[in-house]
Image 1 (tube, rainbow, N blue to C red):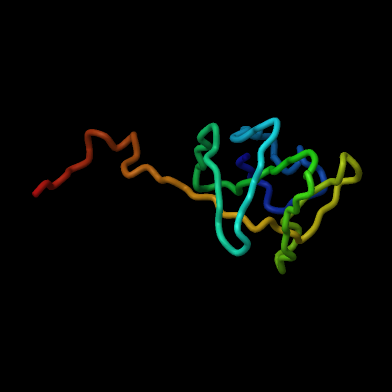
Image 2 (image 1 turned 90 degrees about the vertical axis):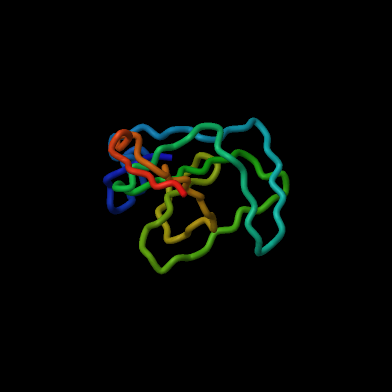
Length: 122
């Protein structure tokens, strides 16, 4: 995952990161995913990614092999939402998007506000 100030993707992965370095949040040498069609399933990241709430966010999903599985993508009316390559070949820019959901867990109180928070207890 990577913050970026880039507002339009191009067919160069590094350029899209806008000078920032992506943080690897989940990695396995092998991982079996099994989901029921039309329902959400998920997994927790290995590392937390602190989204700053301002910049655009790039989610870089990479895998090698499929063992007979399928990764579904959908055509989006928005322009250039996906940059991909197939088996290390040419890099393509497309309107495809992965059907995914990322759950954010906001801090209840910002760490910088400690000492300035008033609480009422019953």
